[in-house]
Every structure is written in C-alpha cells, then in structure tokens.
Amino acid sequence: MSRAAELKRAWPTMLRVGFASAVAYRGEFLVWLLSTNMPLVMLLLWSAVAKEAPVGRFGEAEFIAYFLATLVVRMLTGAWVGWELNFEIRQGTLGMRLLKPIHPFLVWAADNLAAQPLRALIALPIAVGALLWVGSGQLSGDAINWVVLPFSIFAAWLITFFANAMIGTIAFYWESSMSVFGLWMGLYFVLAGYTIPLELLPPWLLAVARWLPFRFLLSYPVELILGLVSGRDLWIGLAVQWAWVGFFFAAAQASWKAGLRRFAAYGG
Amino acid sequence: MFRYVRLFGVQLRTSLLLMMQYRVDFLLDAAMSLFWTGSALVPLLVLFGKRDSVVGWSWPEALLVVAWFTLLKGILNGAIHPALQSVVEHIRKGTLDFVLLKPADAQFLVSTARFELWRGADVVGGLLLLGWALVEMKLVPSVGAVVTTAALLAGAVAILYSLWIFVISLAFVTVKVDNLTYLFESIYDAGRWPASIYRGFLSFLFTFVIPLALMTTWPALAILGRLEPAQVILALGAAVAFSVAARLVWRTSIRHYTSAGG
Image (cartoon, rainbow over all chains, first blue to last red; front, side, top):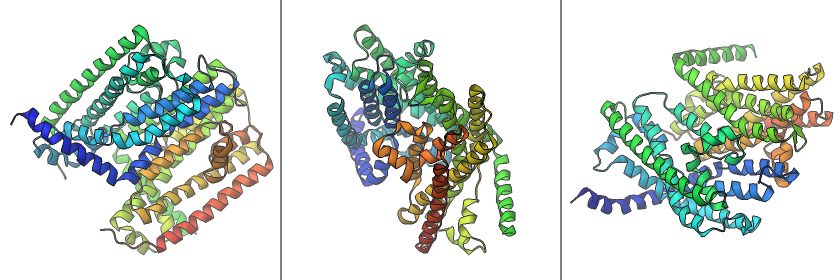
C-alpha cells in the first residue's frame, strides 16, 4: 500500500483518538480554555479607554468586537505540539513515536486538530453572543472576506502548528529551548494584535508588524472578520500568510530532520 | 522560633546552590522575564502616547500599578510558585509522607522548599519601573506613604501566598492542578491595570474575592498618598483573614491526605 493510502486509512482513526482524548480530559481542557482570558482583560481596558474618547477609528463597540473576534480566532488556532515535542525530546520518550510508521508531525497534527470541534463548541457561543451584543454592524459586509476567512484561519493554524513544532525541535540542539517559546509569546502579545490592535501601533512598528509572521497567526483573520482589511491588501495578506505557512513547514521539517540525527533517546 | 529562622536559612542555601548549577538558565530566564515585562508595557505606552489620562490615571500613576504588579509577579514566580508546585509533585507521588514525618511544621517546610531566584528577576524589573514612575512624577514619597505601601505589599504577598495555598489544596482532591495554577496566573494578569477599569461584578470580584485591587492598585494609591486610612485597615485585615483561612485550608487538606500516590 502506498504511503498516501496508508495515511488516508490511519488519519480518521487518529482524529477519533485525538477527539476522544480531548473529551476524556474535558475538565482540564476547559481550564486551559478559560486561561485564554487575556483578550477579555484587554477588552475591558480598551473599552474603558474608548468610553472617554475613541482611539483612532476604534470606539467602544469596535474594541469589543475586536477582542471577541481575537478570542474566537485564538481558540480556533490552538496548537501545543511544541511543548510536547520539547518534553519528549528531553525525556527520551520520543523514541516510542519514532517506532511508528508515520511521521510524528502527522500524529500531533491529528491530535491538535481533533480538539478543534470541542474548541469550536466553546468559541461559537462567544461569537454568537458577541454578534448580539455589538450588533452585526461591526462585521465585514464584504462577501469576499467571509470566503477567504476559513482559508485564513486554517493557514493561521498551520503557521501556529509548524512554528510551534519548529521551536519544539530546538530541544534537539539546546537544553534551554523553552526560553525560545517565551520569546515567541512575548513578541506574539504585541505583534499579533493580541493585546492591542495592530493599527494602533506606532507607524514604524506597524510597518514591520504587517509583514512578520505574528500578524498572520491572529490579527489577519480578525481583520477579515471585522472588515479592517479589504481590496488589494486582502489578497496581499492572504498570499503573505500562505508564504509563511510554506516557510514554517519547510523550517520545521528541516530542523526535525537535522535534529533527529543527533537524537540519542536517553532516559525514558 | 529561632529554629525556624535557621531552617529557613538552610532551605534558602540549598536553593541557591541548585541555582548556581544552572547559570545559563539563570541569565536566560532573567532576560526573558524583563523582556515580557517590556512587551506587556507596549499597549500602555501606545495608549498614553495618545492621551494624558485614562480612567483617572496618568501615565506615571498607571506605571506605578504595573510596577507593583511586576514586583509581586517576581515574588510569585521566584518564591511562591516553585515551592508550592513541588507540593503537587509530592502529593502525586505520595512522597509528601517524608515531609510530614519531619519534626517541623509541614506547611513551613513545603513553603520554603524551593526558591528560584532567577525567576525573581521581575522584582528588579518592578523596582526599575517604580523608579521610572517616581522620576517621571518628580515625586519623593513621604515616610508615612512608604511605610503604608510596604505594609500593603507585605499584605499582598500574604494574600497571593494564601490564594496559592487554596489552589494547591485542590491537588489533595484532584491530584492534577498544573493547569489550575496556569489559570490562576492568567487571572492574576488582570492586576496589571488600575482597578478602576473594572466595573460592576468584576470590580466586586477583584476587590473582595480575588483581591487584585488590594494587591496592585492600592499600594500604588498609597505611595501617591491617596489611600484612605480605612482602606489600609481593610487591606491589612484582608491579608490576615486570608492567611488564617489558608492555614485552616491547609490543615484540613492534610487531614484528607491519603498517601495513596506511588
């Protein structure tokens, strides 16, 4: 049987296993989701600010819509492969995965993707509630934005996943690789639009942030939802986003292959 | 009593020795903490670049709140979190027995078991921010204000520690609390901003249930000399109440410890 056919057979089972494990640890899962409350705190801060006077083109309703959209996109694009990879490399338990006739990235991808329905279950009420709260006037009225959105969210998940995997593989080379996650998250908070809408950043920083991968993890899909991006910029954004998908896919693969040669599977 | 002071010294020395083994991690973690503090400041910097005051707070005043928040976070990550995290580990493995057998108070032993001073870099970061804010305001706080602030901060540490004891005590029941502590940390993040941005239910929650307002906003008000004496008494009373409650919860939890582990 060819590799592709094998994969086609194994993949649905892997997804089912992933989903079952997400359901089995639903309590823990819920707590993780509740921990994603940063957008809500930022929402309170910025809407309190906007109550006094709008910031740029962001009034109170715009901020509420922005941070709720942020929360929804963030929930739908979660990946945690890097932490597991890092842990398994250091513990040596990665060896078990290498014995299986399937690329571990695919296993993790199934695992991370399978949790999405459960995450969507939480995200959906937020989205509907938000819609009722601020009214549909905040949403993009352009059909193109909504057609592009699913592709953009999927791309955002792919970048998150592969960037995560790439940082995880650094554990092959360097014991203290966890600090790279810290660096990545610190940049993410500012440059992905997680704590502040990108267009409020100072112009010089915005000019950089527009092209960095962080925007495409979160801000770009949010911009699509709210209609903050349109026309030519929309297509450029989508192209750049998928270019980053390609980049992180290649980088994660390369780092994985090179790292595996050094892997000694101690411990475990 | 003197025995406990000596015991504290021994525990601290052990932690220090452990720390010296991982010098690179020490520097990395310290640098990372400062980087995070800086990156979290960006929204505030942008905000105050656009206007002079937000919900009644000027830039240096808001910076004071961030300073206390950062300082407390350093204490949390350097002294409270690592020690109590190891309790969870003990409970899971059943090795808490060995701690309970020792001829000293178990809560004291576990609470001082681990200091990760490199995670305490935020204490330095917080003090730097404090200095920055004071210079910006050209404010030399009065002796009374300094004493009050110090007392409030000590109270804040006590509250933070007590809250952590509550979370950890859940480990006696649920065994796994890694993500609960993570959840709590994410809630603690809300203390970064002046409490007046929270209204209604949240304002109540962050003043009386998870008293973030008492921990970061009130010390900032105290150093500005704007805190009412009644608030000082309330804050310190809350600290005592939380500490007593933490002690009771700990005793109850220990009684339910079954040492199953293994």
